[in-house]
Amino acid sequence: MTTKSLPAYLQQVLKHHVDESQLTHDDELQGIIDRLSNLNEKVESLKKKIKVNRQNKEQEQ
Image 1 (cartoon, rainbow, N blue to C red):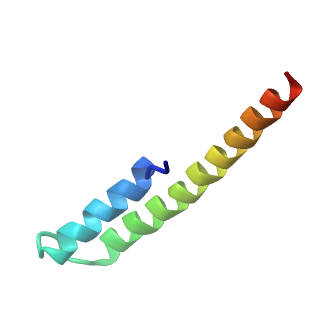
Image 2 (cartoon, rainbow, N blue to C red):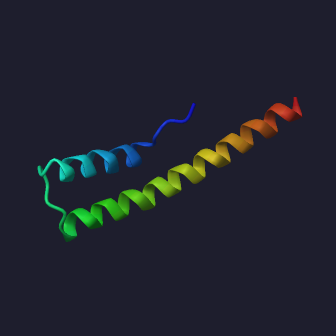
């Protein structure tokens, strides 16, 4: 089962608010979305490293 990271979820919520015309898509919002995207990439990378480390530890036992 895969779950979304918090940054990915926040991006989804912001985009939903834009779609519902509750927020306007301006430069400030785009900057926030870009930073959340960057953070999400880092989170996903760390999740992969953790998964690999866990698999390696299981194989050692």
